[in-house]
Image (cartoon, rainbow, N blue to C red; front, side):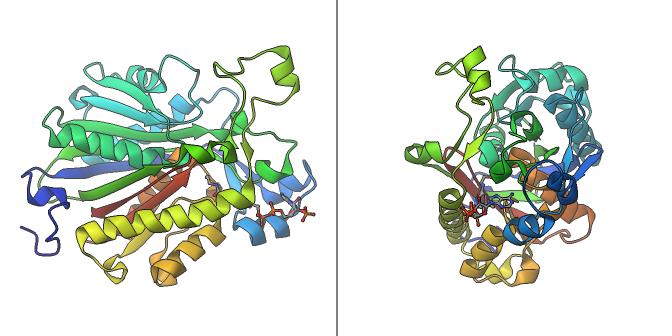
Length: 341
Ligand code: UT7
């Protein structure tokens, strides 16, 4: 038994099976849209965007580049790191709010691109919290011995649901994808515990009104700009800080570890002020926080996956380090996870 984790909720201590992240990868599209570019599109300024959000630029997918393309590229990188071939994948879970189309699932389109013919495949919709939700579901399948190798992807083409005339939202988001391979492997990059939560009472803070069964696409829905996302920024901000804090507290308590023991905190990359507020209230040192939203903006379900990949690639996380992932998004949804890398 690992002496660091006495609490039985740290699952690999009592089930005798370890869910490990054996590969990680990410992909962002080539085109970069800077704050200065946005100054030419809406009434905004680089100074406002940087000081209110921390974002400097974001990547935007090409017209003929879909969520499935970005997800497949990130997946190939994660598979390479894990040494996993397409025919070894048992299940593909894609977290996204911007699927290629309402159905079939983007996971099926990625299965086709990868040639992962043995894999079951489905999409999961938990907005910006989707990657953590997907990690937990993957872990459950592995712990129950249903599957050995699960591919989890967070992928978004948010530029396709962004109202490029609305300065309140269009400066915030970007496109990209991150992926992880989860396997039953001993003591390597173990996923120790995951917490998830939701509050549907606040579903009207961040949503896209059109395109579903409530308001299907019509000429009126297009004219009314119902197929773009809408957000109550200030209320969302307040809820984000509270929910991320309580999710982080929950997983730290389960593992009986102090925030000081965490090498790297990877929060959802929506706003630098949210990240700093959460870090401060957790009692974290600034150098524990991983921030890359200056380059990518908010990429929703892809956000923490891209950040984890960058943190590993840049050497911010090494073998044995404890990593805390914290997410928050529309729904409202939230979650946190502790990983021993
Ligand atoms: O990923 C899911 C979770 N998402 C989040 O957690 C995002 C949470 N919210 C936020 O990050 C922030 O609320 C925003 C960055 C969206 C907005 O920052 P804020 O400090 O809450 O600004 P605000 O919405 O209260 O707006 C302040 C002012 C307003 O002008 P008035 O009414 O005071 O004259 C806005 O119209 O800033 C104005 N404003 C802008 N000005 C220049 C709003 N957007 C812009 C802009 N450029 N792009």
